[in-house]
View 1: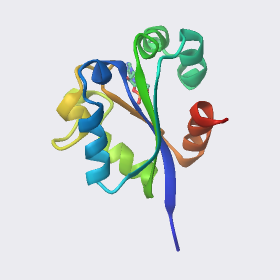
View 2: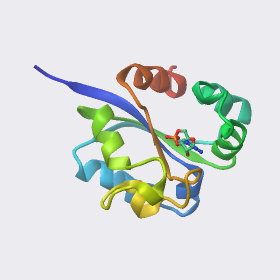
View 3: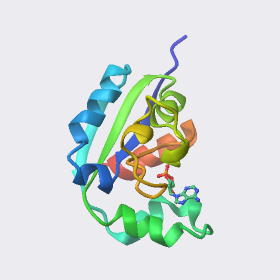
Length: 136
Ligand code: CMP
């Protein structure tokens, strides 16, 4: 039985700004992910608010949305078996200080806000988040 999944990954402004796009993409590829779609965009704060709506009651919501819309980001649809969970493993803990060695956030993350990458947290949200950025 095939459990090939697609998930959404975002390379956040702090990593794009430091020219880490290719290095981070190589990590995905070296870990068995196919990058099916990728585009560099800059979003409005209103779009970030829609994207992160699930966090709208959190105290960090406003800063989070300002941050995601503060500079260019790379949005990617990536694919492999167990992509959703494997991507979360590869990213590491939300707070880079707690992320394990070998994870993207441990290697590149600066702070809990500037944590370099976002990844969908469930298969259901992966579909929603892929549609958000890639629906034609
Ligand atoms: P991300 O995976 O993009 O999902 C929501 C983001 O909110 C998260 O990464 C963090 O960058 C940011 N964030 C800021 N403060 C917190 C917090 N206290 N808990 C969780 N996420 C936070």
